[in-house]
Length: 612
Image (tube, rainbow, N blue to C red):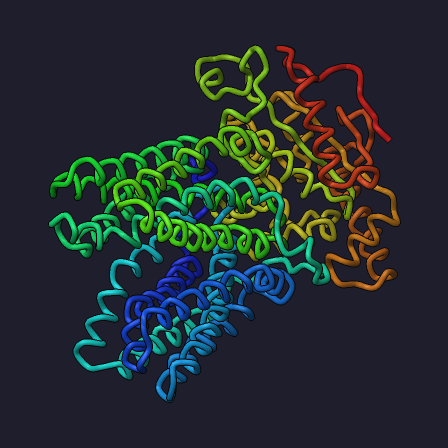
């Protein structure tokens, strides 16, 4: 098999470690979740005190998440993860000396904030570690660590408490956080970009993640209620214990994520959102109308499939279209909706049980699964954050279809984006790829080139950055790099519609693919400000870096193609990104692509468009 067709590696050392970090974070969480009420009772508390402690833990997590997201984006994933894990390790030690209920409740509330910091740090960091083209599969596998802790940690916590008491229980929880801390510190991949945005209310939430988050909120309103009340419900109908139900959920969740992990990236989130909500509704109906053991087990398996399908697909939708330096905010937006769904669903169910019986409560709650699908249908499936193949712009001749290529039909459309340094071409490509439902190849080409050449990604990236300084000397290493990337780019263009940023792709693919070539430029002052902010440079330093990069890109183009970089005759569209910004420019290009690429012509149009 040609190496250029292989996908970037998912199971790296960094990915495995961050999965283990997340596992131990939730061992700390789930080991104390069913046992802390017993500790409150031991201190003399009643049901009200237990409810207050549980609610304050959740409230602290919900309130702190937006601020934690900003800190993750501006201070770094590792820094906030470490702070959260130190707190999660120390607070169980504080329970040792809790002399009264009030102090224990205060500690538990603070514990909620530190848990938010640690979990947001790990779940954001993993999106930097997994290849963008395998985001859905990566997040599904990452989510297995949470599912496994859900299956193991509650039973572990109850066993330790019953066998040895509360102090050994708290020691186990602290030890889990310490193991996560040492694993997190050892993760070497830290090449994520930090934001320089000041703290402001509008920046605490990521609007691109809202459709996925609202869909999840409505889903969790129903799913969480089943988890909370199923054990009591089973006991009242002489069904098998709640432990069996949760084991079946865990098994089905794990199998779903293993089997369907790649389906998220390949087919989008729509089918999984619809089928997952349908499975949730069916599982609830089985509980209500068939009070026997087989229906009970089938209900659990359906809920396990439901959670295994819906949660990772919506998390991928919430994350894949946002800027890397906004992933912390996107994660906090997503998990606030997750926590709110659990809290409000449980509250509403409690009120309904007082007025109705359990069967009627479950039937009312099942309606939120329907609402989740309805909201997604109208507001999610065609949003820019959705990555469904149906969102792909398809001309009347279906030229973007892989099946058309395989059967000898017209080649897929490839959009190339050349750009001045600091003009935001990469970000425009990200947004456009999300809107079109195609892959963006930029940093992914580094991974593919590294696999082909047998080098590390760091070596390839360093060679890319310094290639222009050596072109006059015909450095063999850098010439090999260019030729390797040429083969990879041509192979990608034969396989699939996509967007390729930089690397002279418009020249490499000329005559070999159906192209729409774009050149992004911007006003000099705009570029200098953007470079200074992104690279934390002074204005003179940013201007010098701008001039050097533009000069080297021009020399690189002239050396390998014989043409002048930025010459309008080599592009179908030239656009000034400083007029509309990245999102406005991407929206404009999207409209032009829809209109101009609707014909069946395979050659580039003769009249070039220059928007200034």
